[in-house]
Every structure is written in structure tokens, then in C-alpha cells.
Length: 274
Image (cartoon, rainbow, N blue to C red; front, side):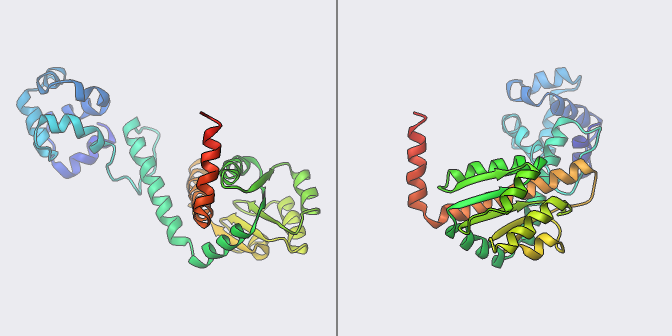
């Protein structure tokens, strides 16, 4: 019995036939809108009456209502605080990952201060040139942010190689805004880069999880991404879900500063692809 069926069993008190039918639906979800209740009964070695009783238990008006909406019903079960497991079926994983993302975004919102958002808003509005310092997966996330910021009229560059990051930190023009992405802020190279930027009084926006580090001490503005201890891969996933939400928020803040100009730029870019 799949986790989905077990979860519904807890709430709806399913009998043996209900579980058999529901398990078939979970395993063949895309087919259900195309088959009749009689055909579903035939495939599950049950009866049309058994199918009708399950439809009622799941609070659907009739079988037509059921077959059109059961996919949405099963894809929107509450899994916000449940961790993916090795034995989970695809539908359970879909629900758990979407639940995890909603939970991460909720936690990220709770941790954001309006003061931080306002400070970031002021820095972004004033900046024409933005440089992003990040390595490894952080660098890949930085590429996403870079692309979005270019589309909003900023001139952006990502520095991923450690030696180039260090050289860059010694020669940053005063009119640049620097963003630094470092999950734990452990890197000695990032420490040197941040120290150099601070010595030159370059404004910095930091993205991290560490509240007490050299990065947070020197940064002009700090965004704390949400993070929770679990397996390393899931912990990283949680961090990057949170980080992307913050990036999207930063871009929307920037977009809102000069809506008409951003729309004009968007129309110009759109014309190139027509």
C-alpha cells in the first residue's frame, strides 16, 4: 500500500476494496479521466458499486466529478512537514516536494525583516553595476540571478573562480554593488574577498545561513536563507529553495521601482524573439 493510500486511509476509513481501487488510481492516475466506473471496477476486480462508494467517501459528487478532479485531489494532499523517503512512489514524492517548498518559503518569509528588505531595495535602486561572488552550486544560482537582473536593466557579472574573485576584490569601482553568496561563510577565500571589499567601503548584500560570521559583520545588508539539518542533499535543497525565493523577491522589488521602464525593456527584448 502506497503512502498516499495510507494517508487517505487514516482520514476516510477505507475498506479493502477502497484501498485496491485507490491504489490502482494512484498507479494509473493519467488514465482515470478516460475510463468509466465500470471499466475501473473491471480493472480492479471489484464492482461499480464499490467504485461509487469510494467516490462518495472522497467527497466527490459523482463519478464524472471524481474522474475529472481526482488527479488534483491526490496531487494536493498535505505533506508540508514530511521528508521524502527511499520507498516513496512518484505521487507521494510530488506531494512531499511541493509541501517542502511551501514550508521552506513560509519559513523564509517568517525570517525576513522589513528593514533588510528596505535596505536591499535602496542598494538595488542606486546600483547600475552589480557583481556577484559565488562558487560551485552557489555560482549556478548566481547565474540565474544574473540573468534576471540583466533583464531588469542592471549590468551584472558573476565571479566564480577563487583567484579571479580575489583580484576583483582589490579593484572594485566605488559605484558597484557586490552580492556574496556563501551558505556557511567558511571559505578563507571568501573571507579575504569580503575583507578587501569592506576595506574599500564597497556596499555588499550577503546571502547566507550563518548569523555570526565575518560575512555578516562586514556586509551592508544580509539575507538569511532558511536551512534545516537533515541529509546533506536535502539540506542543500532546502537552502536553494529558500535562496531562489529571496532572489525572486529581490528581482520583484527592483521591478517595482520603475515599473514602466522595466516594461519597456521587456517589450524591446520580446521583439528580438518575434
